[in-house]
Length: 355
Ligand code: 1CP
Image (cartoon, rainbow, N blue to C red; front, side, top):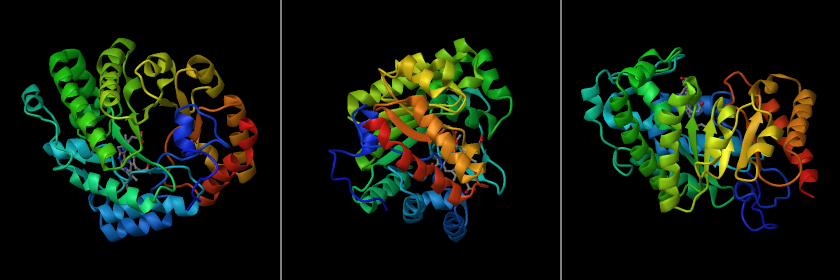
């Protein structure tokens, strides 16, 4: 576990998101809890399933803490999944082994959409709030806790498709053919995400992350109308209610940096297809940037990993506002030793960018 930080007021992650000076670049990793860790696999086996792991606060808390025991990370992230909201709406989530998520009752008609209502975070999603409360207490202020949710459009793709998708035929078909039903679905999801994230803050989350994993499968007009507009609605709503930094992760969102920064968020999570230096020049005076090492760099040797970490720190350049992360999540086949090499490299190489 990292030591408490006495030398600066506030944690590095919080300072970096506010673009205030830090002694070194903060680092955490998307999917830092997960199958690449043997201790995660053991706890998951004890839980019996991924969903049982998510719905048992003690076990969710345990797996969220595991990566912090191994690596010198500057944040913990709630262990849960973005699909808890549709599950709470009654769609019947399950995870078949070796496959992605599946819904027993995907949305198949506009009338099913009309019947949806936002879940109560302290009722149907109480297990998530309990996990947040427990984790915050266990962390004891050592590092901040990040809460998260999926973007309305990303959630809608799973709810309409019934699971993961390649072409998003049904979800995109809905947008083009039944835009009013699509907007109704996205509006109920935006309300749900907003109240879910607000409840996470009340339960102890100190920063928030919204994953827009599938935004950029949309054409520009549809992206603005059906994804960005709802992200903006959520950010504005949250900003009126809580004083908590919000990070938006837009997978493939490189061409939308200006629009995403203009939502009023504090940080943008970017994937590895974006040049970090150009991104900083474009929007770095408005938002912090989180990212964006290609996760597959972690399949290389420690020396190569270190070189890529150095390159990324140089691409961002001196000064605050960078949260080191991967461009997407850690993968099950990755070696924890190489993950450690990346984290250690950030610790060793980043201070000189903050002198
Ligand atoms: O077998 C297992 O143990 C389950 C694998 C797994 C894990 C560890 C899934 C299934 N979800 C998670 C946890 C998870 N999911 C976290 C917390 C862990 C952490 O970061 O430390 C988070 C933040 C998520 C978010 C998530 N779930 C996203 C958005 C981020 C992203 O990866 O783009 C998405 C799209 C999901 C859906 C989902 N859940 C699980 C899988 C395999 C997927 C992706 C399916 C697909 O590609 O469509």
